[in-house]
Figure 1: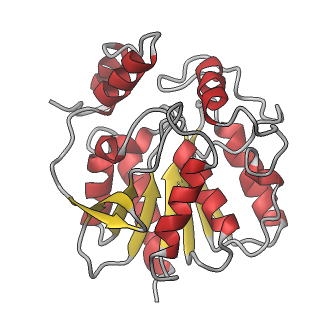
Figure 2 (figure 1 turned 60 degrees about the vertical axis):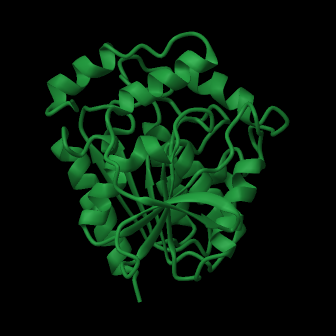
Length: 274
């Protein structure tokens, strides 16, 4: 069974420890994401296995799953994708290569292969590390995305964020986040714009919508990015929900705030559709 409200979700997360080995962490993330719907079909786009959820005639949103580039997969995001599909969005979830088996820039190369194989009117989005990947893909292919939607994007490695040492985020902590990133891009400097994309030239990004929650460790990542994008002349909207936890939109069936975040993302995609 899936959690049905915030209290049962928090109990579920507490009952699914992440473990101290890579295999246990991957198992723990799958368990935390919970039972998923079987909705969707697999296809190849740009040579990358991609889960397609929703009507082919609906506006397309390429969504990169979160999990620190190490955990998770399209399968852990099926419920979230099914909710977006119910709001008239076709969601494409690429199975991009993850670390430590593949390191940066392999995820970005896969994302660009998908984007290059699609119509230029596609929207891009992602949660956490997936938001970082979507942002990098949009920057690498200016003009190819018509909209950008991010949930708690991981966008700063320079130490500028003041919320990374917080305790109490049920889905993330600073030490784990840093340990996962060390597996992903050991050769990339923290001030490289691909590591910390708020330092990139953000001019020319498509309309950007960002979701986050007030208690998560990546709150400052979101705030720093939205400030930098707005200063660069990007059309920006953001919503910060109080309380909750990182990646809250994985459970739209348990958290009304998660469903509302996905509703706003769906509207953002539709607003940018031809």
